[in-house]
Image 1: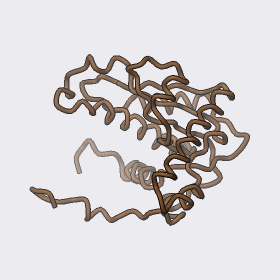
Image 2: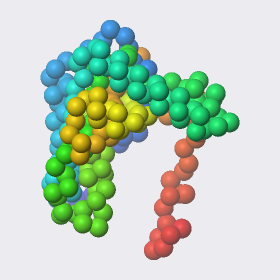
Image 3: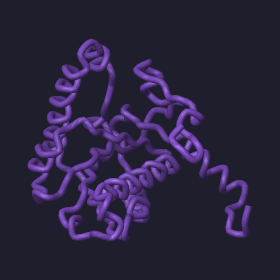
Image 4: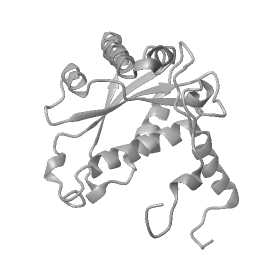
Length: 214
């Protein structure tokens, strides 16, 4: 413990929001997110660390209902293709609820910016650090949303090229995530994929080693 530590109560809140964050797919219908809250969430995302302070994230707020439905159609098409790729687990996968695009209060698309190739600092040998930076921004928003009592779900089942064209992004921009955001009926005490018995999380000890690959 150092003089820079938060209070015990503040630390408990930090660890609580980390432990209670969930990838949400079910949203309360007919709800909204106040503009001031959405602004706080975007500010939290923008406060994320980024390699070389490049800030590679771009946020597109989808307010057109017709466009939302087209995004949903893209995702549903890829959902069918994913089922085919899963072979014997296809029917099991199709029974899962994997997104809440048509139900959530707010829909956001997060993308890598079109000017990121000009950034070399921290990316010369690891160019994917721009994606790592965007992921940090998404996680910031996710945790802030949970603290605000809102659910968020990260949808990655889509063809990036087709979503880029639909949203008229520059050719060198790259969509990374479709984020479903809004009030939810509840927050489950376990990840949805565990509840649905699709897969189960493994203990931390399996992922930590010392000095060499474990």
